[in-house]
Length: 618
Image 1 (cartoon, rainbow, N blue to C red):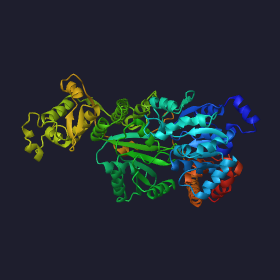
Image 2: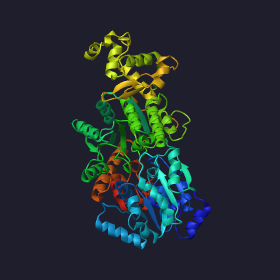
Image 3: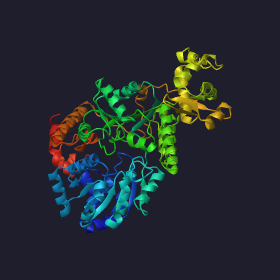
Image 4: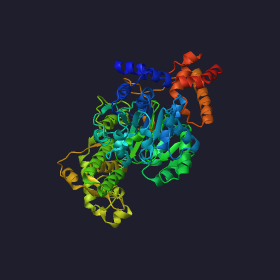
């Protein structure tokens, strides 16, 4: 809560307290989590670094102080799409916000500039490039600034997964705009990145507020790659008629996967940095419109996308760090309702990532950090324990007990002593000259008479056929897990397997036991089965009976029509959670409608009569 002194000063200045603004403007009865602490810090004039998971309410931590303190709030944001969504959302609740960027209509730019100069603008969004270039800082130094918010602050860190060098120039802001409290915000930063953010922004006295990274509504799963497209369609089929994001490691792959999905009647769109601005904008418009579309994208897509009802995020290639992975799966379930994430991984992905890192021209210190993060990501993919616990550990957070909702908690993987199996694989690779891929090694172990086996006379080896009692999939799993452990590497144009001697030698000598996981036997369909809620571990949408469900669908249809008339995303008018509450509680007056969470004064005035009219005809 805010201190009494802070509230007294706000009242004395003729301003509303943050609690009153939260209720009147945004329609929320109380702050959540660390929001009150962050707001109090800024209201007192201090700096803060705030880490909250996606959907945790970071924006309110600077929007509320900007509305309570005198002057215009300055928000530094990296993407136009992010700025436009934030501005549109604020205007929906009656806040005079604007964004200055290159794609702005000239008339709109003139209006925003006039409001800025006259002190009428509540919040101004700009990119770091726009802020630091030209005369923007000089202009801002001549008006009163209430707060400086640095959104997506992980971009300032060289250790972060989306480093933008221009962000580091923001350290000059205290000299150019002295006495203005600053608040840096991000959803993804490990302890090393947090320290770098504070140092790079010259915020030595910043209060660091770290919320839990646990998202109970996200059901995290990982599977070895098999029939990739079939695995993808299996999880997408759970969310037919809903939005999903599929991340790929290359532009070509996004195009290929999107085309394959369209060929199977999925509304799929490719998105990557190689598209023209017009193509990107068209894709974003479709996605933001509320359409049930599947975006197949590289990591060029995602940051700053505020759509709350993305129901699944699938990775067809393994990210190179837990930070990047967490940022991307964070696009699912921003509304707090159950959403699914799936990571597909293979030994070749891991070996390729290690190889690229070895070839990197980055300084050795940075390569060491990158290597640690890559190994943490590989460990997360291969873990047999609670996957949520493993993910949170990457951010320095300890989850006291298994989450109960990841794939490994729901369908625990059995382990076995795989020392002998590992020795057979390593021996086969060594005896065949460390120049063949997994398919050939499995053929030798299984005693198959392939053309390659006969040509190289590998059927004459003493170990030929020593693995015939186990199927191909078993040996592929052993190979993949040995790659993950670092006992094997993949090299050359033909993905040949070779021993990493410092790790492989102790295994071959029997000095290092090897426990391996049995291949996952639970299908994705089984993993989608409902489970009982345990100690609040799973967020669920409010259940609706038949009549309430009809009202909910009618409200959604009204919302879509209203959004189209305004040319804004439907979720900016009311989120699904608010519409569910309206449908369930069935308010019959503006006074009772105002009591619904998410219905602030501006939205009540703009939409109240229309919402009540929809309810009356149901």
